[in-house]
Image (cartoon, rainbow, N blue to C red; front, side, top):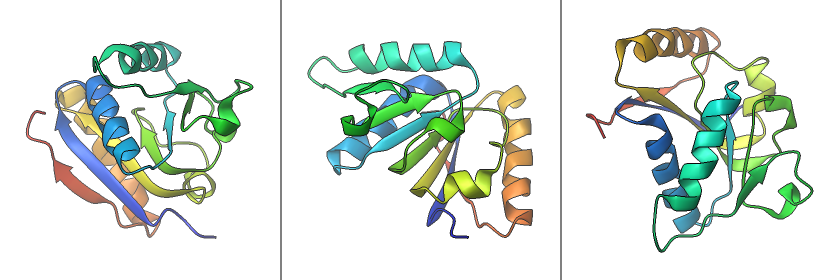
Length: 147
């Protein structure tokens, strides 16, 4: 089974949600679609709220993956990765490896795992990185140096 063409770990991120919004902005500037996953509904709600307001002149249409407009909306998010439709980019904001990540990753051209700068976020990220490597994936680490 095919997996994502590229898996990137963006680590040392000061604010994961703000950084996720910047990734969305960059992706949309390249006309790429994005799916966002996290098991934490509160974090996804914060992401959604910030995406509406983080840039005064930007508009980034996004909906929950179960919304009736999800098929035609370029940015979707959900706590259940099985409900995420295929998109160009999968943005991971969770501290755990997604269930059945091989099947999940196959629906996306690129996976970006956002890792906070705090040690309690970096420890589980190291485990995810090792899990993916052991599965034969080749994640690439990118130090964001506190951005």
